[in-house]
Image (cartoon, rainbow, N blue to C red; front, side, top):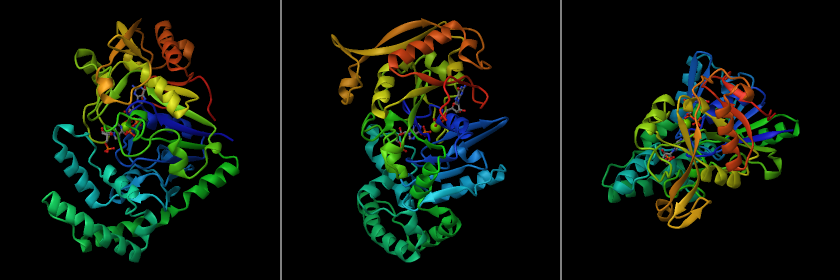
Length: 427
Ligand code: GDP
Ligand code: IMO
Ligand code: MG
């Protein structure tokens, strides 16, 4: 029975939502295992575009069970808004299940996210200011409030008291801003608890039973390898673990239960927020990719920085997440270019660097080594199989697969479900 983990392989926004939606047709369960509403996953179905932040992209199929796992941090107000948004678009969300162990984003997390960013000045991370970092900080500090605690009024009140004592001190004495009023939060969060309690369950059991029953389970990652708290461009990262290994922790299953890992990787590279980006194109070509690829953040609307495909990153993500294969997305965006560059490695002084460095100082001294390939002019947006692609596009894909060290299972040639070339069926 296959269980597939789908992971972002660059700095996020690789098209995980689209590929999840595509693969979800054959899955019985779709599970989010980390991140929160810093994620923005766009799915296009026919003429309709859906933007999802917390709810797995499988929700667009009414019969699939969708799970928000324990590793996710949930802003209940945003979740309710998303449920209402989906209802208004005619999508049934009855099959959603939320882990009782997932942590809850509180108003002070959002405030602190803003204040911490401001206080950093030029060293800011460029976070989404959704309270993600501070919520994970509390989880690690063992003072977080979980979904199960939100549902228990007495427990919630006690935990809120303890948290507000510390947070209000921090807000008023360190940051010099107003603190939060307990009654206001109690009132607001009681409403959320009432609205969301029907979805609460031990989701690890649901996943385990599904796997035991031979069902197909798809794990939908958020963010990407280089935003991983341990393996990304620290400190310019998110506060969770987008890599494949995190699916086990964030959903509650063992590594022996995972059958395949699929890396979602764009045919070029993008990044939102601050931090290093070796193949970034600041001039015309970058703007062209931004324009043709509609590279603007789904969550914050910020323009995404664009650059050439970086095989050092691809190799890194193949290693860190143990990718069995890749889904290369947005190949169509490269159509019309005379020539396309691929970064095969970095040059640092007189040394060649083939592995992604841990030190940002070292990374800043690295110059990409480029290989040029001829582009193609033909419209590829209705290609149905690999052989339909122009030879130059086929060669480009073969080369990035060779450099990355992983085969390609899926190719994206447009935003729609139908604009997907399948080389290898995952389920
Ligand atoms: P995610 O966060 O990884 O789910 O990616 P986003 O949804 O934030 O950003 C990817 C964007 O690219 C979305 O607007 C998708 O509709 C779009 N997209 C996904 N795959 C393709 C593709 O193969 N071609 C084109 N042109 N657009 C794509
Ligand atoms: P999806 O799932 C792209 C980036 C932010 C910032 C850094 C930390 O759509 O690929 P945070 O709010 O998480 O503390 O911000 O991480 N970031 C993303 N960039 N796609 C995402 O999600 C992202 N989620 C967070 O821009 O640089
Ligand atoms: Mg996104």
